[in-house]
Amino acid sequence: MNILVLDDEKEIADLVEVYLKNEDYTVYKCYTAKDAIECIKTKVLDMAILDVMVQETSGFEICKMIREKGYCFPVMMLTAKIQDEDKITGLTLGADDYMTKPFNPLELVARVKSALRRYTKYNGAEDRSEEIQIGGLVIAPQKHECYVYDQKIDLTPIEFDILVYLGERRGSVVPSEELFEQVWKEKYLDNNNTVMVHIRRIREKLGEDTKNPKYIKTVWGVGYKIERDEGN
Image 1 (cartoon, rainbow, N blue to C red):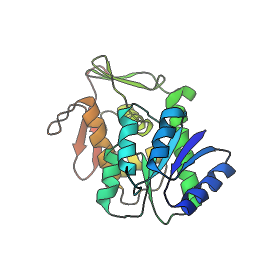
Image 2: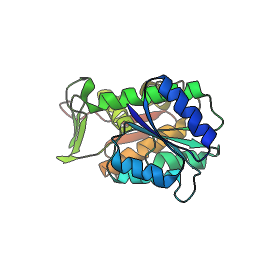
Image 3: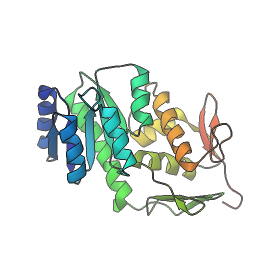
Image 4: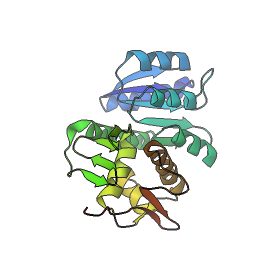
């Protein structure tokens, strides 16, 4: 597995590199945004770990570039800030996870492993249930593909897992806590913003009317629900 690590604080980048190499990952370490962008263009990557506050081009902008170019590998943001606004900004731009400095390197490694397991599964290493069809929306877990009226929708692995989890439980309300713990495989600790932002991104990609979404309904104070289609 190939992982890009971008941080202009040399000590942090070196520390992350050591811990990831101990897990037998190949690490492309960059101290500048320019070098990171070149790495993205020239290397086959399975994950990127991006510091938010780097010179010239922020980690947010690099994350946005990764998603705009159609790369679906997981992206983790590293930030010295703890404001929810920064977290939401990263998630809105397509990041899968974030960690606040200072962080426990062992926790970072655990999250990297979780993200890469999800990414490997997304790329066809694991079969799941049959196709889920709801009024023009088709979710194909075995192929890890999603379509709306025959138009393929590009989803990140975590977005796809959210949609599959809701689709498999169509007709039932899924609490935010359950959705987070089942998809992220972590204990829910007031992470409603994380779930909310990912739901928002999925709706945008599905072309949903934000005021009256067709597929993913919000059950206020509880969670989310995909209605059961007639005959399914």
